[in-house]
Image 1 (cartoon, rainbow, N blue to C red):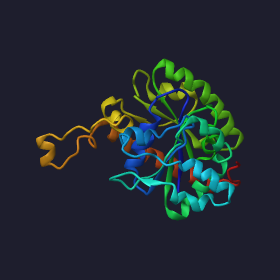
Image 2 (cartoon, helix red, strand yellow):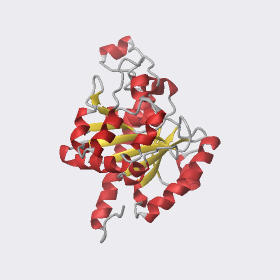
Image 3 (spheres, helix red, strand yellow):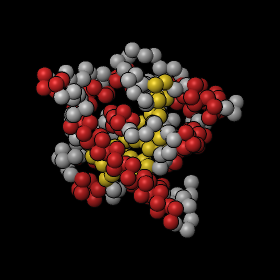
Image 4 (cartoon, rainbow, N blue to C red):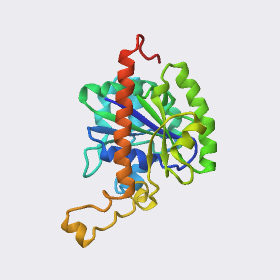
Length: 274
């Protein structure tokens, strides 16, 4: 079981679309967790077009934790995304609930990691770093934390500051390989090597700049209709989009990075410290 956290240094770089795209294309059973403290379920409002009212899942988990039943409550507060095998743990309804979640993030990190016996991976949309109530224990307790950023100067300026902070913390807990960067729009204008040199964090994967396909995941846009030739070939134009092709490549890179990190940990004389 892998716990993967996606987060950002600034607003709207594509964290939600990336996390959802990875979950929908994941090769194993997966739970998608909305841990953004700003409130509202981006998946329910966007991808599901507001057709589903999200339950107070995280608040229910906070209450269950106080009663000693956090792990048992997890299956009861999740929902399955229609037409998929993705299990969704929706976010809070309001940013005012962030205070109630401060004591939840650390035990939830342990609970999500304990899902290993079910063969289930977990992908977390942690939203923006540093906001009140942000899920700090999840960010630092993940098997792989990905700082998601675009490649323009404004985005990289914000990412550079947080990359330094994250590097320092991951170094102190002996988990440097568990930190990486995921680029959205590689080459728009800066490329992987330039970004890795600037941030001093390895770039694990990159996604194509494809606003139309991203709008399907993040804003509830209608998927493109297949052409006559695509219908004859039983091909889905959304699945064949540049974004989805790059998401599948990113999935492979993420899984390979985690596998390599685990091999190194098993070979090391001392385990990871948290």
